[in-house]
Image (cartoon, rainbow, N blue to C red):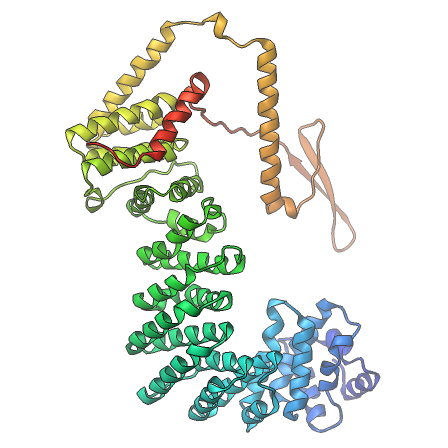
Amino acid sequence: MADKDDIIAHHAAGTLPELFVECMRRHRTDDIGMAFRATLTALHNEGMIDVLEAARTIGISPINQHDFFTVMEVYCDLIPAIEAEVPTMLAAVKALVARAGNDMASGMPNGAYRKWAEQCDRARATLAAIDPEEPEDAAYVFLGLQALAKNDADAALNAAIAYLAGTAAPARSAAAKAIGSIELATPEARSRVTEAFAVASATADDNSQGHILTAICEIARAHPEMEAAAVALIDAAAPMVGDLAIHQVSLELMFHGEALQPPIVAGLTAILHKLAIGNRGTLEHIDAAGAKLVTHGRLDEALALITPLISEHEELTSLEPLSGFSYALLQLAPDQLAKVIMGWLLSLDPNLGHATLSLVGDHHGDAPLVLRVSGPTLVLSDADMILLAHRVIGYLFIHAITAASLVLELIRGAADGPRQVMADILFDPLLINYSGELAGWLGERSKDSADPAQPLIMELLARLEAYIEGLRKAGQIKELRPSERERLIENQRQHESMRQVQKQAEKKSVFMSIVSRSVLLYGNRSISYFEEPNGNKRRNEMKLHSFSHSVEAPRLDILEPFDLDYTLRIFRAMRIAKP
């Protein structure tokens, strides 16, 4: 560890950052690091060095960015115990934050500053030293108010309301944000805040509007009796929100949506439906908020948030921008997931139909996705059951087992007429196209004598056997067999198609972005050498194995592709069904 003379010498030479890196790497939490920081603090407070000088000039320091973060961590540990005037400390902290840039750790010096400002009368001095019109000082309005609230909550609230009523937009947004974190112990304080928010919201800039809305949500979360006031403020502000406010609201719902009262969530949801779809950061927050609501048992609110966005924006139907929400839905019980899918398909919205296909396609694993329908969900009219069965097969045709499982559930609750209609479309086009995997699944299910669908399943399998037997009777018709040239062309087409699919998949692969590619021309093993830290080389041998994957193609996609495509289009477009 460096002694006092070393520290003083490095200070004089302007190389304190380099000394921090040398002494503190791997020693931040041990006794050596604690002793080094104590020595630095003592030397600074005794006036022998100005440890903040290196922080104020860190922007021009030659140290690399990795070493900078080591230096920044040292300052974060030092700042709360250092004696300094507010302007001097502010300059040092701002320089550290600026050098950190957009890194997620860039706010660490501000946290240390807040602890420092909580001591003595530094919070008031901070608020007096900063320029409320300066955007870069908004963070220190927030920190100053938080530090002041630590010792005098009433004074902090008075100062925040004064900023809120002022004309300086940066300070106003910071004050609104701070109010949401101040303990409002009395009904009178909460009433004052509500009135101040209502007045400020009417003329607030968009950023301040967002902070006002999130603050009132935080207050209502801590004090449930404020729900009505929060809902009224949200509803009044909704027509005035812009992109910045919507972004702030998305953050609130993402972090705390599961703890907010349903009327407040409904108000925030209405605001988020105004999202400009190009704001991908905000969309990610909405996705996370929807996923959190689903996982906390608030499925209806999650659907109310996400479904209208999918319905309005075709680019969301792939569910790729909503991957968190999609994953959360797939973790639901089969009957809950079936309820979601039925709702989307019965909406008759093509975007929601394609989203249903994407949702089922996101299911992974060896076992197929099998849906169940609870008794209350089956309370549908005969016409709606027939309509839903057609749309299920139309949209989920390539996921035959999932589609069949849902149609079988609908048949269970249907009268004789609709039951026969749904059985017919379950056979044609679904079962005759997927006579392999789907027939196998139905065969296993038919062994369960307790299954109410057993008689129907056995009837379907018998019809399938008769259908296939009829195909076999024709034998091989030489005139219909493709020529060798045609088979070669088709093989090349399939090969090129698979190659393009593989290339697109590799572009999205996490692994392909972190590993190197090696092409083996022959052999059954790969040998690599790795250099260990001591310089020795280690031999690594990996044996190669084959793997395969198969996909069942629909039978009629070969025999009658245009007729099959037309049938599925009709099923997807169906809007009215006669029982």
